Length: 324
Ligand code: UDP
Image (cartoon, rainbow, N blue to C red; front, side, top):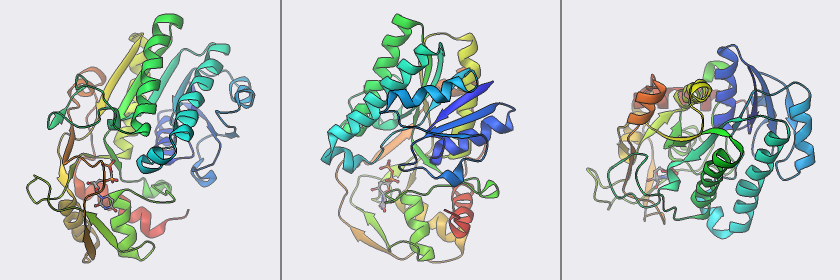
């Protein structure tokens, strides 16, 4: 199949493009390169276009007929979304609507959408499944939830077939292929730990050790970006025989604390991670862990790189080389 990967120059999108290529699909990447990297577009041509400029999208659909779209384009910094909600709704919601309308113009009826655990808001249980209430607590999570809602309505009105994948904490890299996580600014824990170690970023700050968890630091569900990419391939196959709109949570189902992440980084690197203990970061729940039972059952998905040491090991190899 020919897959249009919107946001394929970004972290998760570039790994999905790699997985599609390895599975024998043809890939075209559409990206405005605002946060993505041209160097990460390696498995098909790049169409530099912006979802906020609807006319610019047609070029991506006309060069070669598109069989399905994967959509990773988004602004994704929670703090920024609180300060600049208009930017987030415009980019993430209006941009997605423009893409959906372009798909409709070009009669493309299959979409895999990049969603997030942020659609849930404050967790009401330690293990979050798809039935957990969706009450996002920031504009980023709300913008992703609005697109999910649009996809439900589009299934009913236009017969759009879609899967929304709600990622928990994406981590790791594909160092042998020269792609990995490169955000500016970087807000995520694992890259901040590793950049602190390498001296390519400031010393790590740990945001709070007074949470009601086993060691006082927050617990998260880290899932390897290549396992996420594999779930996208499976979602594509699933859509062929399951019309309508579907949602799946994607995580390892096991949580690790910030201190456990630091300990794993020390094992992997053989170095001590210096850090400063800070107060809590606003909006961080104590524990966020996915139940991915539905993805396991319906998609036949299971993380194959589930160990924290492997996830951090791949991220470490990438950060040491970091070509971009
Ligand atoms: N965290 C931290 N220092 C950092 C970045 C993150 O202590 O430099 C903590 C953060 O408070 C949270 C966990 O690490 O408890 C994971 O944060 P991240 O931003 O990676 O992902 P999130 O769960 O917020 O999506």
